Image (cartoon, rainbow, N blue to C red; front, side):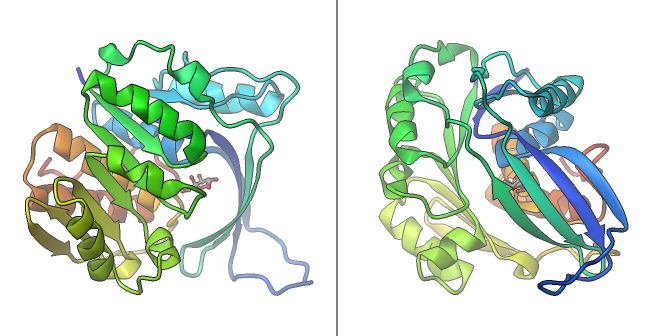
Length: 290
Ligand code: FRU
């Protein structure tokens, strides 16, 4: 079985569902409130586990009651969290999410003061038991040292570029697979995915690169060609929260399975569309052609 080590965060997501996006300085009542595990790497782990991959999450862990809840929910879903270092007197990163049930949009207020995963911890690990290493880009100064160590194991490495971060350009060269989101592309001055992927593919022609662009679908690059996949139409939009994390899991899984680039992109787009038509990540409908 394939073992993948995902480096990132686990959060507590407090999701308030509203029938419209509230105005500033107004008081509104939520239709529902759900408390759930969140964080890009944690969400991708849950999806990968359902795809039959052994997901191991490495993320800083707090020692509060929220951490107990988050990590027991991860473990119930068979995500291995044994490597997560616990920080004393700390609190779990929390996201307060407003979900507009009218259009499925999600607005996130994220709070954290938990120390990011430290390279001094990571570089003591034996990574030879894994088949793939994934990094959600976060503290790039620390992750640069982790990646320098990780590359000595000669395993495939994927890096998600979701937001612009200090020194993020220093970690990009280490990736075999670069997963670029629309907000990151926009932060670099691109107003469309094609230009973004073209730019990065010219600089890093040996990598596989993806770039998502909401309703316009996604683009992918490998072996000198750029392809596009339209977004799949949604019967209903329930929740877009974590659609990108689902897409990334779909790409990684398909590449592990050595599918072609177009099969990989199609699979990931379909999987992300399926996620948008449901709440959360459990019981995700897996596209038949995987
Ligand atoms: C969705 C998500 C949420 C989390 C937030 C962290 O992609 O991972 O689950 O709260 O982003 O930035």
